[in-house]
Amino acid sequence: VLSHPAPRPAAPQIPTWVSEGPSEETAVCVNCQNNSVGERCDGCRPGFFLLDGACTRCARGSPG
Image (spheres, rainbow, N blue to C red):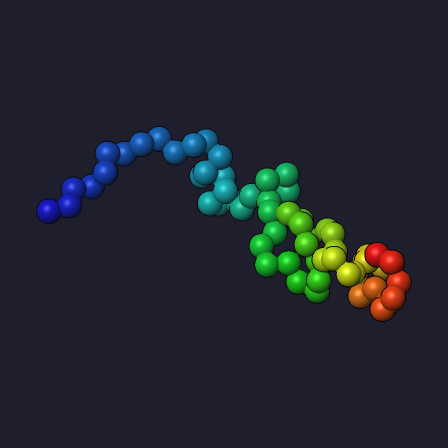
């Protein structure tokens, strides 16, 4: 027979995360799209560069 675990106080930030979501400082992106990378999807994958807010593939033969 399983018994219920003893109640433990939650870390103070957990109720806020559940009701409001993470703050901008603690949020981390998952599954970046359009060849972006990083905790905030603010960088580009190797072979791509940021141009006008989008990661664009480098031209063949060009450094980078």
